[in-house]
Length: 476
Image 1: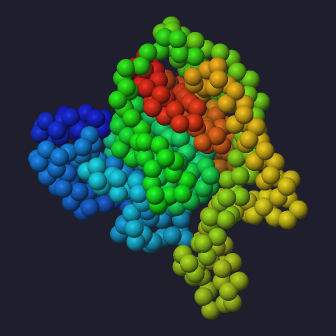
Image 2 (image 1 turned 60 degrees about the vertical axis):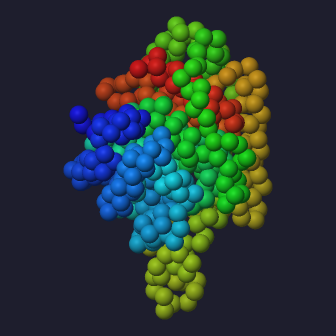
Image 3 (image 1 turned 180 degrees about the vertical axis):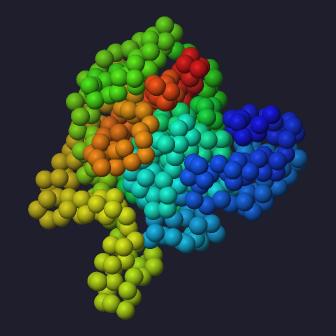
């Protein structure tokens, strides 16, 4: 029996039944990381001593009978989530060596739940990218084929789960950064409703879009982890007053009579033929189980990428202003005047993609362009909300591909930044709306995974997870 091949809930059952100890489970995963991380580039920092200490505490809870649903189960965290005493770099040279003085709310919940932190995972710098090639340290690689990208920006977390280095991982999702890498790596990625999972301690990229969520090997694991990590947080002013996600009815759903919308914009000519074939085959299987499909026309989807790449950089230009070598980050040429020192610090320590997005955002917010760009983008966002709200009056969920293409070769798209940005075409609407969405595996094309994207109305996380569990049961 290989402990690293099990799902989180399978591990939890073995731990509860005293078939294995939490320390044995932690050691098995630490050994896997030591063996495979060089191939996958999943982890930036491994917490060996901390993991073994947390495993010992978890085992004591199990022995005392006070264990929770995932006590003793390992987890990995994207390296833009603050961890007390453990480096948090956002995969950027400007935060290299930074050690936070506090835990994010999500990290406190992980510790309270008795999970075991294995380490911090790689990402596109400041979560800006769709391939994890923008990490300042090294790219992550897809465990399905290490010549290919695992997606981004949570590529390290996806590689850790898909590569059997950790059964659970957390990522952040601003425009698809949990769901797109999940699709490319053949795992599950869930973005909760905006505000259901505290962002306190998440280093901000675009504050109105960012949301923490899980990457797992099946829907049940994603649901159980989400139930432990969601809920209101007094430290976070965008946290919404909703109870934690409930899994009480996760396995009791029925597909018969469920109405699902198929926006025609998600099924255009730009989609890879193999991806469309796998998604259409899944639709056929679900139809045979009684799901009713309705074609939708949601014109605002066509403007989603453009809208996102105005709003997100605008917010990033503000959020990243603190990284100036004075408040955060080392100083380059500190003997120079203030302006030149800040220019050199930011110019040398930020990567190309981060600098590009800061400049785009600053331009969009500048006098004379604010109304032409930023205000128009906010208006399109509002239009999209109205269109989807109208759609959800007649359907329960919206379905499409997660990524328009399967995993691509590392470096294949690096010379075409627009092609990389278009990879989030199907995932961006959920972020602009603040709606819950999930990607689950639905087949292969040329041996590469394809993700099926399911989206519900705002606040319908429990309902979405129940549907996704039923869909997963049919698709296998």
